[in-house]
Image 1 (tube, one colour):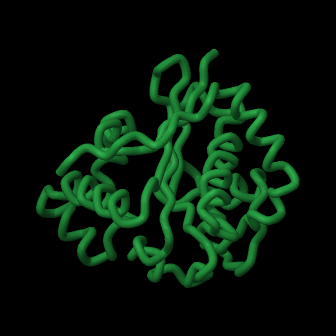
Image 2 (image 1 turned 90 degrees about the vertical axis):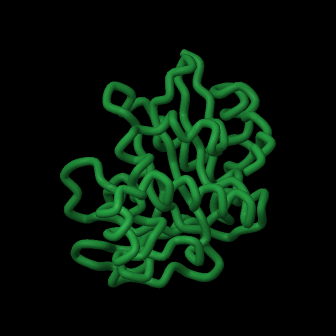
Length: 205
């Protein structure tokens, strides 16, 4: 089974689920997000957000492929690019952290360790870019796939609670604690995924 994680760009945005391509839960503040949904412009807003973050900050996601079939994705960015984060009771995200916004593994591919590989790939990317941590808002009452990740899943892949809350705790993964397994991760990723593809050239707007 060939697995690979490819940086998210406008060219492979169509490889994430349709409902996620037109979801701007994290990308816009609540008022603007509702207006985009009502006006039917959410998909365009999503593209505009990804384009702006790519140009300004760099890679902000990965698409997971198994045997060339897209089976999942992950999105992440500094909190300054994530307006919705300020609406959470456990905000703000720490200034030294990048926010893990959302992630999804398609049914049929869950339980195979792909979620952990995604987090490790994000950690590797952010370590290379000089960040200290990843933070995320969890859903402690998670029942089905949604924009906010289940807190239990985040805890299972190494996050620790830094600000408790009965519904939306804020969790953190210290990247310096991953330094001990950084080389192991790189070796494992090389074996598991083949060489992670280099950042693709951005297409002109």
